[in-house]
Length: 188
Image 1 (cartoon, rainbow, N blue to C red):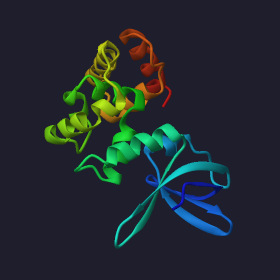
Image 2: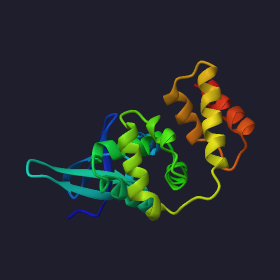
Image 3: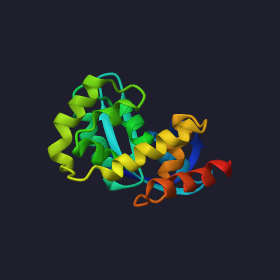
């Protein structure tokens, strides 16, 4: 099994990178967040790899951190969540926010992710709550939700708002998150 890859980015799309190492190019699916953090073509990259083997395919999924890889592997162990679904979940918000949502059992936050229905969100909470640790305080998750709703009410799409909120400080209050996100959205 392939556990990691270090090489040069030779091709890049919205869903994957091709990383060349030792004369071989590996097609590695990555999250939108990882893709946005990668540099231009011909730059060096190191990715932690999850090798997903099926009877008709061998797919590689790449992550910039070991924490992302471990959370991805927890998600794909939930029945009904495949590698592509787990990758899209990781691309929506930070791992810390996902941990908090799962820890407090907030299925409504998880259902706001495209492709996640109520039953799947409940499965994620039930199967992963003990693994991610129960969060006693849900206020920081509420701050995130309030900021998201405020940005959506200002006319930004949920995707634009989430992308901007991923880049603001985690410990900020609602107003600060909104201000910082608006600066990021205004810079586009």
